[in-house]
Length: 121
View 1 (cartoon, one colour):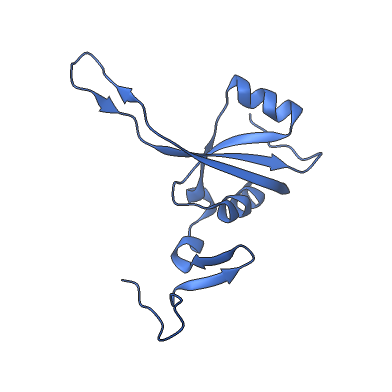
View 2: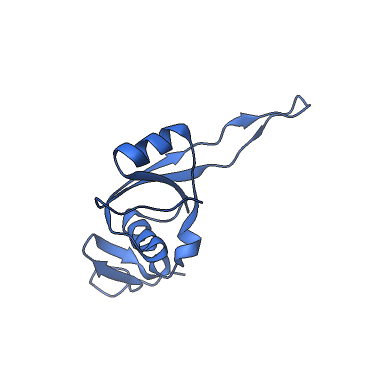
């Protein structure tokens, strides 16, 4: 349950960061909960070689500030920019007429400082 402070219009469970007001519950997420995995695709490989960008699957509740902090903490690199997008799940069928759906997920393209790399082995 969220409690509102009297007269200020701000949530008591908020914290001011350089990117604005963020809920404290969101700040409490662990870095391992935020970054789920690194996506290895042909396009991602070209991006990492040419532009020093890496594609990650992240928690849908995480924002750019949290993703940047988690990547810097986990991989010991300097992040310059984070681009995010919500990807809708595809309709799937397996040997039946009833269609299911793969889950929705969030993709983050992280640009690193020149010279920094994420080792994917």
